[in-house]
Image (cartoon, rainbow, N blue to C red; front, side, top):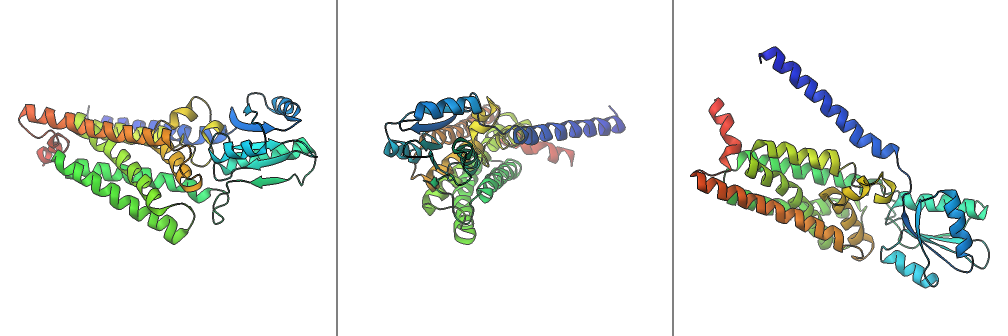
Length: 326
């Protein structure tokens, strides 16, 4: 393949990547709709309201029937449901949690107005989003920089640090410093996310370690191709399906669920749990991030062992080509 043919191939490959990125980012946003959104309905007219919801949009809600309003509030605060409709004593009242998802809260408010037939339906925000970010715009925009910086750190460590031990030290340093600094900006300067600073910094640090560690781990284990594989996974699948600006149940399935198994989606869910719900619902996303971090360390170990058996540090495989080219 001559230079012209190689240039044409690169251009076609870049165009294909551009098309994939447009699909990955635009398709989920164009197909936002409730899909089995957990919702509590209680009170003497619960069955009637559930029937109306089924007529309004079949399969839109996964309806549970707690014993009373107190149980419904507890379910919201424990992140078991996104909201509740309380019947009895007049028009239905709606409990929402914009801290869990402003997008779902808006949809529940609109549905409640249709159910009651009155524009001034009584709506109570049980777990409200931060007053400086009521629509969750800043919160949603926070996840992508964490992912992008994690990818960048992973690439730099893979290309500039040959020793596996040095790469691990760099990952730990980036995780700690990145977590502390990012939350200092988000909370101290922008003031758009409530919750405990150290807890949120620990989450941001774990996300940073998991993303960058995946890049470094794959690069150490399989070479340069691992950098591209990790970066594309985080950007083309993880970020658009993270549901950071919506909710997993609003995305096309099974992609909404798949997104929660990748670091960006787990990061959004875990940050919400720590910031707004005192840790309720944090177990699953925390386990997901810990697994990604553990896999990254395992890949680094595999790369180190492979390099030892070959008699040369495996990490140098990623940086040897530029040196040879010179």
